Image 1 (tube, one colour):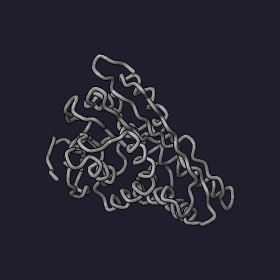
Image 2 (cartoon, one colour):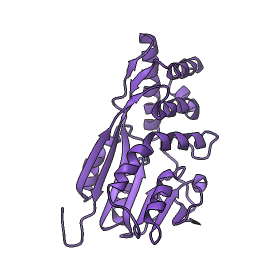
Image 3 (cartoon, helix red, strand yellow):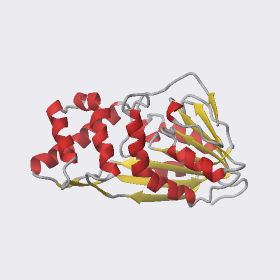
Length: 276
């Protein structure tokens, strides 16, 4: 595995989760447990294999990039980028790059497959970044973007109306923290149209939703966010007592909530001289 620097600028405006905090490793574990079961089968269906050249931006803990590196061996290569990439472990066929996708360049027409999971929704410049990712694809190459639409994630079973309202208030506060940095917590539903506007074809959005409960990775991630985003949640109007109570609620074995919708959307760059 190689590590290199692609630029000195760290553009973190809009990204509410610090990738270098005491909470970041748990964030990565929860994300992988909750969403690798969606992301990885979608990637496998592309046929990614030996000899492919792949890019993942915002790799975080590197679970997706490491999976890809195993798939493209022995002759392919995966580039994994992040503004703070030191959490990505060394892996054969994997190059780790410190890179800011907003301000640093990407090679053009270089990759068979580009992946971005839960990154662009945080970036005010998401449309420009999407264009950069499209240009990084080889003709005929595939882009997969996995993003949330958090407009629907209601509590389904809570001890009482107050507890249900508190969980809803927590979700509103988290969305407000995203918007304060220029994020769009509903962007998942807009990805297919954005891909089409960027010139991709064969666009295939797939929605995923599940029940959250105390034993689920998705609810463990929400519980983790009450710690990781504590200061931002307080700034958005929650109190320490609110946070203590919503944590207790999410640990309650009887609690149930619907997850937000995760849209896994793929699109293809047209082949040279071809269309869809």
